[in-house]
Every structure is written in C-alpha cells, then in structure tokens.
Image (cartoon, rainbow, N blue to C red; front, side):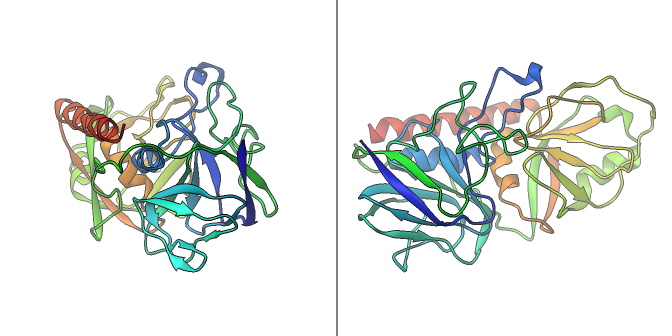
Length: 314
C-alpha cells in the first residue's frame, strides 16, 4: 500500500535525490545525488528510513504538496518557512501529517536547499542503482525531471519505528558573513604563482548566479598559474576546485562531469560540502587549508556520529 502526494505548486527546482549513482562515470554518467548529503541523511534518519531512500531536494522556492493519507515526514537543511495547513513546521523533527494536509514552503530564512523525507521513502524505480534525478540527461527520479503542477508522487506507508534519534550533527546552514570552507591543497597547487597561493588562502569569493548542481562558479581575485600549458584530462570529484584560464575558480558539485582538464588548486573536504551546498548566489566564502589527515579524521567522526544516532533510534 502507498500514499499519494499531489503537487499543487512545483516550486523552483524540486527533484528527487538519493546518495548518488555510482559506477557509471566511465560512461559519462554523473553521480548526481543530494547536494547536502548530511541534511538528506538526517531527514531519512528522522523519518525512520534507510539513508539512501530518495528525499525531495527543494531549492529556494519550495512546492506545495497535498497528502492523500496520514503519514510522517521530516524536513532538514534550509529554513524555507515550511507550514503544514498554515501552521509553522519545525526543522529536524519527525512530523505527523494528517490525511488531506497541505505542506507548503514560503520565504527563505537561511540556507538554499531543504530535504523532505517521507516515511517509507518515495516510490520510484531505481535506474542504474539510484533514484537520483539527472535533469540534463532526462532520467532518474520522477520522470527524469523536476516536479510540475499536477504531478502525483507515491510514498510507502509504514509507521516509523524507534525513538527519535539524537541528531548527530550541527546545522549545515551558514552562520557567518563570509563562510570558511576547509580544503586540502590540490595536486596542481605548485603550478600556481606565489601570489595566487596567498590569494587562495586569504581572499574571499562570492558565488556567481551562473552556478548550479554541476558547479559553483566563484567571483573574486583571479588565480594565475606559474606553469601555463595544457593538462591531460583526469578524474574530478565533488568538491574539486578547478581554475580555468580566466583565473576564477569553479567548485565542482554533485552533477560534475567525469573528467576535467583545468588545474585543481584544492578540494573542499567532504564534511564541508553540505555547508557549501547551502550557500546561495552572491554569498561569500573563503578557503582554509587543512591536512589530508585532518579531513579524514573529521569524516570518520561524522560517520561515527551517524552510526551512534542510527543505533539509538533502532
């Protein structure tokens, strides 16, 4: 048995995402997946789902959704003024939704992306092992596209079990005028001038409006290379910071291409990618270098916190 969720208003770019489509990059298929993995996983944890169930990634202007039957939901990530039948809805909590209720989103307060999990998960067939939507390719998720008015989503119908877990992480929402992002220096670091190396670690950059799920273009001091010339294209990751000829960095995001030929000056560490994903165009950031060992330790600490919360909830 499943419940129906009718899309009354679609929002700006509401699409289903999970943790990504791995194993097909050699065929040119991007990983995709949730931009803010932490908020996606937290929402599923609160809803009583496994971590890789699809959630609805809601960007800036959220949808209005009508639930045909009673269920439970959780909303994590950006504060987009969610309401249930007109009453404010708290983030980071399990919420009981009565039959016929209308979930709506309003003004953006903080962050850019909200994640809606429904108990049992959204009922969409996996494609290449993932339910993630790839809009450019027209596949995955709900009909390979963002939601439209009149769409009807299906969700499984079971009661989330266990006590509410203690949330394992602090908010992924930005809290400073200039957001610090920790980075590991890239393999082409030595190919940049001394001035560019100082600028990379001291200057601030703003996110360009020409940014999307594929990459965040940054605006700020240009970074010059000391060793010009062509590079052989090689693998890139979520968080790789490429520098094209104009010197303006590009941070590759969830829908990054498989390979790239621009030099990589650094990589945003995995635990800070959710924070980056919550930054909106024109917000400022700066890069703070850390060691690979520090990045690995922070990642392991995050996974241990998730494991502890999952154990407490089961």
